[in-house]
Image (cartoon, rainbow, N blue to C red; front, side, top):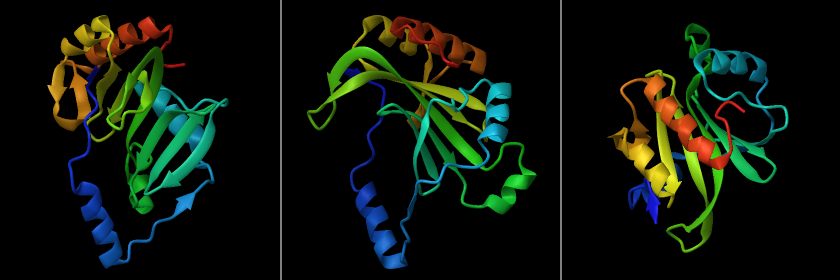
Length: 182
């Protein structure tokens, strides 16, 4: 099995939990979809990030992280800041990063021993205006494609430019019979 997905460091979750308990962290889950999808989709279209599609459903918002599904599968995560007042001054409306999930035909065991679908994740960092890729699967051709990029700390892999990174993403998604922006 091969995966470019990076697991969280041991103890990180425990630390977050402890800080929440000691600091009075308020955990809330909201299922109200954001009201700015049309505005943020215009930004996505301009920079080449997959838009939120009408066929998707808003799943939930937790800690500023919005999760969207298509059917029963996660298809997009959007991480927003918690400082909405600053969003008016930014080019991008309070979005820090977002990830698009694309599923292939392969199955593999996850670290817990359960099966998961083969997947390509396209990650965009708004502050850096930079795309990154991750892959979880065993397809030798896709492994070879992603290894042609440069590994970048926890963000995945990236080419010399966004154009290079997206060209590899598009080639990988062809193996799944998918296109990146649909």
